Length: 367
Image (cartoon, rainbow, N blue to C red; front, side):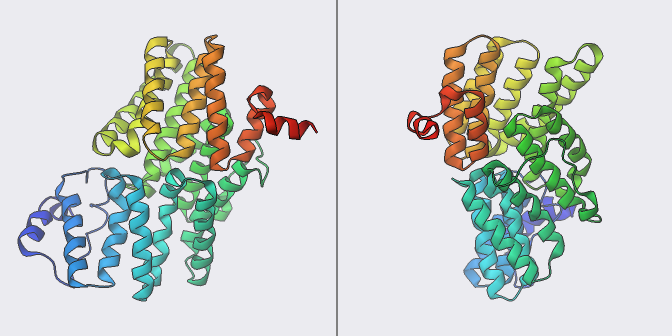
């Protein structure tokens, strides 16, 4: 696999590909090291172009599936989502239903880049139905928690604080268990439940090898960083130093990914830096980093990221007595959450800060 990543690119460049050898080697090509410009990444792009030009199917769609899984480390996550959906069409047409089911793993990227939560829900429901029909129980379990997350933030199911992950349901399927922890951590971050965020990210970290080289790896690390920063703000002495050291490691990891794919990771890096500066009491650095995070997030379609960054910045300013800018940012966050479809989160903000609610909604609610 090492040769495939480092030497295979040169071989494919010289000789092209044949019908029986067009798939990337898989695990080695699916690591963050396969960044823009690396032999593995360039080889995968060349394989796709040549195979598509020569009409190799379903092999081309199999290669596109592999490419979609790790392209997030070099290209906007939207590209990977589209590649997975396109691969699905080719795999179904070619009768490869097993691999077609794996294309629904792109839901993790779709959750972050789809304009509304509804678009993600449609994909999850279609995926669950397809996986049931084709007998792919393990992949179906991995999608379960995305449906739970959508229902929770839309207000269609209650969130029970401290709710236990149903471990028995995912016995023998650590990847599904990881996704459950990640999605519960996303809900905890959105609803401001630091205890749940810490609990689920702690449980998620040992499971990350099950998604090595896949997009959820980055989401889990971001959430872990938010949990660590929240703990560090209230910790003292040696405990605080250990939390900050782990947080610094998260930031270094995100910095490496942001260097190769800024569209996906630069705003997450800036958010992590802002939270770290807030934790150590560096007001100026935190304010600059929150501003940079908001600027970067505004350049791309990442609805819940934008909303969360605006809310975290708002809470930072309010904690320092800057109420005007703080409430302005909370209003922006509320609008972002509502536009995405997170009605339960918007309702939470309305309850905590009644003045944020748009006037026409407030009047209707009063009536």
